[in-house]
Image (cartoon, rainbow, N blue to C red; front, side, top):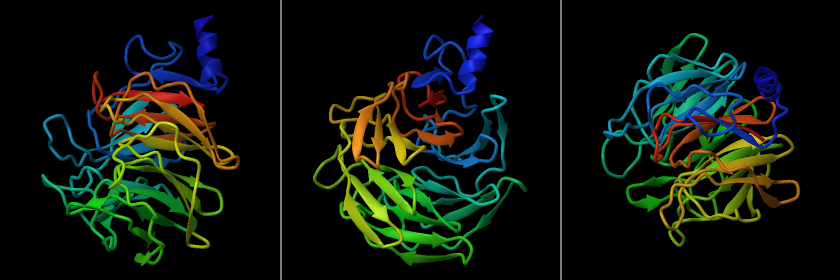
Length: 316
């Protein structure tokens, strides 16, 4: 009988359920394998066939890492990919066509500042190459993919200043251009892509509110910003995954009490409303996540009270 439950839930019938690599946490029907190299402040991109590349970050000794580990959800296994040329934390990334991705920004030395670095990973050939440098050096920024192998790289900070920068990378031409600046400068925020080249940029730390609930919507086609309903729980150092029908799950982070959170709040762009999802079993901050098929997602790494190797899978 437990095997039947396992199979059904793996097929997506277990709605609003978490599975955890941590013993005695989450639903017992499936135990995701923990990430081999514990890290925080890393980034990730989804790959074909429910796989993902988890790249960079820092370990508990504050060593900046070039580590690239590939998670295959279908087989629940990890493997090693070619290391990223420049070890960094606080970077961001976008998926590109043909199982490639652009890994941009971050920091590779103690202190503030940020990098312009743009390194392209090709999963098929397991190789890295250099892309055009981002115009504005930044760390703790966020990004969304756009159509035709483009992406918007937004916010973050550089040299003690929180940024409103919105810079558009075109992988095909290997060029950058400027988009309309984000209305509220924020760092350590997160974002999800929406339909029709739009995106929601949520939470983070701003100059006026360290634990922001701000939700600002960018429309790339019109190059304009608008306000969305604020997130119920102001947070920064959170992560997010897109869900079907222009929704997204915004998970984890930390709040005004500096608590490490498992909070999971679902944003519906169509109705401009928020609702509560099942909390993540292991509260974490500066984690990363990838969307999987059928409204699922893997939430990996980050700082927690348990380990920085935690892998928890959410079925929305």
